[in-house]
Amino acid sequence: MRQKTVTTYYNIHTHKPTGAPDVTELVNVYQHFAAAMQYPACSVGIHPWYLHDRESQLNELNKIALQPNVLAIGECGLDKVTKTSWELQLTIFRAQIDLAITLHKPLITHCVRAYHEVTLELKAKHVAVPAIFHGFNKSEAVAQQLLGNGWYLSFGAALIDGHEQVARVLAAVPDDRFFLETDDADISINEIYAAAARIRNCTADAIILQQQHNFKTVFNR
Ligand SMILES: [Zn+2]
Image (cartoon, rainbow, N blue to C red; front, side, top):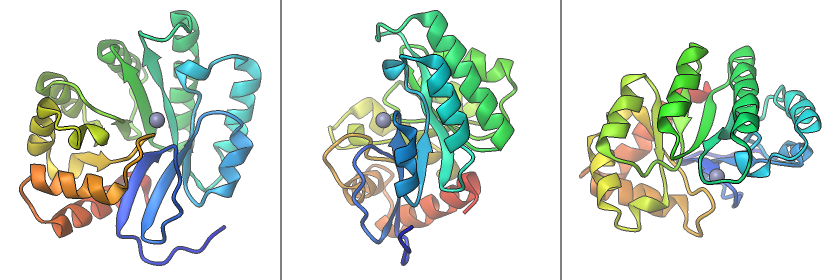
């Protein structure tokens, strides 16, 4: 594994690893889980879009999830737009919630038009590990509900696209309850940090310190 120098930025969800020395990036691995071993830090999970052979996918996931460089389970969740059957999505999401609980690792959720349903699932299992809603781009009302349950929001490219609703949510989110990410966008995490500083009307250094604190608290490093 590559040795890290000093981390300035944290990118908690990316599909495009850069290997930049000043970024701790959680590379998301959603299939062929053995690939997770090549990254200093990653998250592994079965994405509702890529659910095909549940037995073998779950077996493989359960094994790789034990590795110390796997810092979180996910992205996993529920999606009302994909063709994958709802029943199958539910079964696999529940199995991954259980896995996160067993391993005491945070859960990164993928949620498309299913905030109510994802909330019900997390509550039914009394999830005490941190749950992070990645790629958040919904309303203040949805944000309030998620935050009210003690969960975290992670923001990405929507901050740069001039998405006003998301900007309002980020402007109001408490310092200790949010993360930043690039997901599959062709932008750098530095740009996302700069956008966050603008929207929250604070310095880039303030964002860096908050993210450092949040990362250490949630991912335990
Ligand atoms: Zn993603």
